[in-house]
Image (cartoon, rainbow, N blue to C red; front, side, top):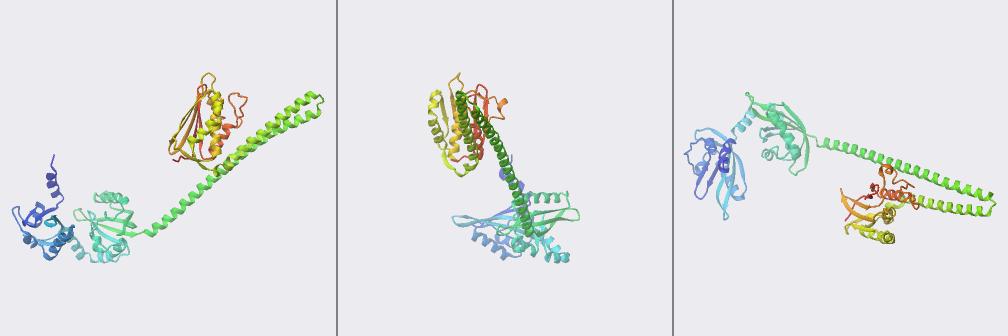
Length: 500
């Protein structure tokens, strides 16, 4: 494998880049083979600094460039005309950098590149295509001649104005340097296709960056000029400022997006209204059915009491009437709770510590837990807090824990596990018991229905899980159930969000 130095020595000639160094104190220098080729000297030729400067037509300008590099400590570059040892006139681009030791310049070094072909190209164009250049310079859109490496060879006034740079400043740049990074790959890909002869021209909308970094949208059209042998010479770029047009299109697009958003919001509102209407209709059906049943029973019992002459029978009927009245009152309370689910929940939010709320319900149910010899295990981080309606959270916890106690399996000690964790930024609360379980294949679609019971318990009203579901959903959450008959049940409450 080649060393870095060996690789450097092999690659630099491939780039045809002259590398030089001059020790100022010792007046010793180094030229690589490319420098010697440019100056047309042999391998044994040696020139001190003054002799080297003698190659340059404008020696004063070169001295100034060297002085600036030493004074500023920054890289300097310039284009110069030289006369080689064979009397040939060439143009070269010189890069200079000064090296310092203890604050004193001890060495200068840099590169030399033969740009004669580029300069001759410009001169040839100036001489042979005056009419083209007149149209080029005064075109109402930006125009440029760009080298196959991306250097600006020639630019017109409109392009300079568009890109916010002076001509000389722009000529020191490449189009890659002032192209928006997100558009560069696409531009370079098409440029390489053009050089390879795969396409004859290309057009694209792209973003340039002015001197202040502001974005300029432009429509770019590029063609390639080749010599008689078909070798690429330079690109001709036509660049039209479309910033205002783009802003107008963006505004139109924004308007379209806003209209789409409004339409989505309208549809969502309509869906909410439809859902509310559906709930209202369901509620109306429940009210109509339940109250009609109770009213019918009361009316029938009243008629029977009025007609009954036997005192004992009449007293029994009066007792039945009282039971129906209590049932009617209980039904009205249940229906009132259902209405309250959507009427107050979102307006009574408070920041609640989940563990404290669970412990509070555990205290409320302590007697029932003790009577059932139940083991309650709570694995919830002490710092979990949620924004929730206190009454809803109390109702949810109370109903789910009460269900676990009520439907315990008499064949084994009751165990209830409460866990909390986050999933996708949402808080999940699990309440698991090892009770009787529910046959979800049979009752899965009815488990959260109103007045739905599954174990024949005479104390069951079928209202608890219905209320829990409505309360959870009213607060923007979701509840699911996992259960196996004879093994137990897991209720998972997914809250709208979790906050720590």
